[in-house]
Image (cartoon, rainbow, N blue to C red; front, side, top):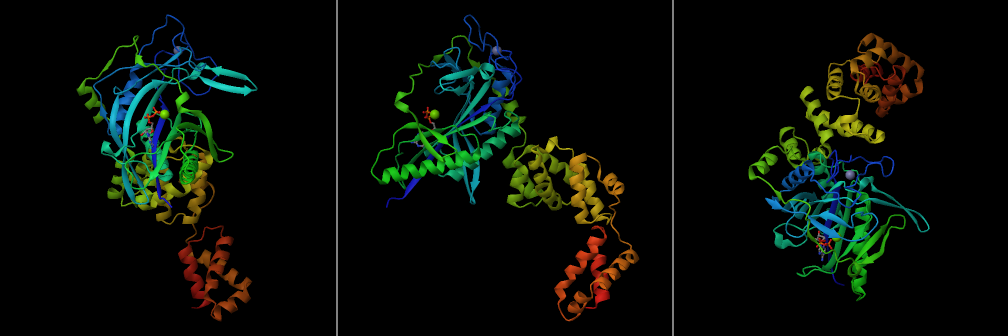
Length: 484
Ligand code: ADP
Ligand code: MG
Ligand code: ZN
């Protein structure tokens, strides 16, 4: 049986977070009543002329730099001609051939302890199309609000002659997407919302006998709107191709659709039937020409990126690789973490709260760290209350949840709800006595050697004091009274 290896290339489209569209002043925003954010330019009316959105160009240059690309000092726009109702002009303005804004970069990923630099072939700028809604039967509706929204395309390189590594598994493909999305969100150029379609991914995949130096015929998978779909779609397609080749069949170069409900891919259209796009330079737009000094200025002003941040957390805060990965996955979470650490100097304790209770509450509420009512200094203050014995670790969990709900500072919650820890020995002692009196059988068994019953007594004291008794004192007093 031949051992096959997959080779994967990823095409990612990201709608850019600009105020206005690529070539006109219409607002960019998700949703809105259909066809209310349109003008003669983005509707492609005759005689209208496009004007380049400077901010969109800046976003793509910054992305290219963040992806370690070379930025072409001169690049141009092209017309990609095809006729489809979501494209009112009859062509899409894009960047073709060897003149994209960025070329020859890489994204670093680590999967199962192996680090790879995935080659980036190109980063270019284009415009989004309108949105077709297939209602039912042969009725379709069209919304041009999306038409002309700035769209960035990022394509990986599968050929190792680029000097970089290739993607060889569904796991690596998903991790590439996770890393790329984090970078785009750190840069603030994309909102990363795959479910809303502002970040879209089309993987290309082929398989070949391991060790072969030629590539197999690839297929392209469309309609993927989550990490899970990218992963499952690739797993399915890799298996399908392996089986087909083992049976002596040929892979057809085609575009396939991912059917999430059925968990399989199905042919959509053959590549040979795809349009001849008749690209030519866009005559209505000037070429882009960047001052090298301006490019350097962009490079200098890039934010700290996820991988750099992660490395710094490991060195500066002594976090484990996996803790650092979890926290730096979102820029907002990382910024929260750093601010909390500056108020409470135990990075590991802060990390546990951020990755545990905080992340869980954020996920349940579906919000990002910067949208939360808890501010970093509130976490720091709460941890100080634990340290000085005002509240127990258990009560801290309740206080944290309350802070998340209300945004009130921890001391106010603790005082308002009477959650202050009981450290008065005589108060705890009377409860300990009560528990011992009420449970003679357990006391007898404990004295006969069943020492693990201590936990039971501690639990009873905690129940009666509503979790407020200082656990150290409770343990000490119980041991004294029970003997042992
Ligand atoms: P298209 O113009 O048809 O979309 P591209 O040449 O731009 O094709 O390639 C799209 C993606 O597919 C790139 O990431 C590229 O590296 C990848 N790719 C190309 N050929 C293969 C192949 N034989 N196997 C796997 N991936 C491939
Ligand atoms: Mg393609
Ligand atoms: Zn417009």
